[in-house]
Amino acid sequence: MLPSRTLILAIGLGIGGAALASGGPPEPASCDFAAFVEETDPAGLNVRAEPSSAAPVLGKLPPVWTDGSGMRARVLVKVTASSNGWFRIREAFDDEALTGQPARPVYEGEGWVSGRKLIVKSQANAGRTRPDPKAPVAVRLKDGLVFDGSSTMTAGRLVDCRGSWVQVDYDEARFSAEMRPYLQVSPAARAGQPKGRFRAWLDQICGIQETTCDGSSSLDAK
Image (tube, rainbow, N blue to C red; front, side, top):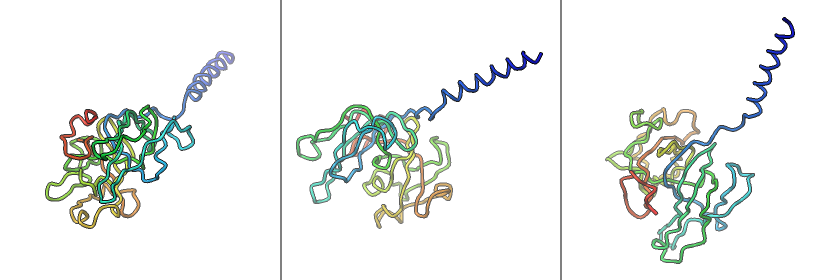
């Protein structure tokens, strides 16, 4: 009897050991939307082989282009996954029609970039507490405004995504003085965040920088 128990215990430990051995970071969340690179370092944004700042650099994406008069143009990327604040991107695109200059060299392959360097443009009229159109409203802009203005875009950074939904971390200090009075932020959006910060889930992501779109097919922007 004892040998049998020992055998069962050994088998159980073996199974558990195998499960532990095969454990590791969770699988990246699958995503499908377009984002813009908000990088100001002239050296550009590193695209890495894994979702880690220690991972090898595969290539670079150019920083925000400006003509000095306020006109800004950003590299567009397609996002396919997220993992712990990092986003897997591909098919980076520098729009020479916006800059009036030859397209800058970009890394067009697949790789990972930090969400702290990505922003989105949304045609939604409300941000939600979770990626569900029926979820409670986390943040809204008064007077029917949507999240596609320059101030609103640059005030947020990406933290997560699920399908075509994006979770954005907003810093109120980044909003223009003209835009702040339009903010309606729920306590749920501020819960667990530092003072002056809030988060919301947005859909209807638009992949066209210079005009509006319905957000239903942001990956057709290129």
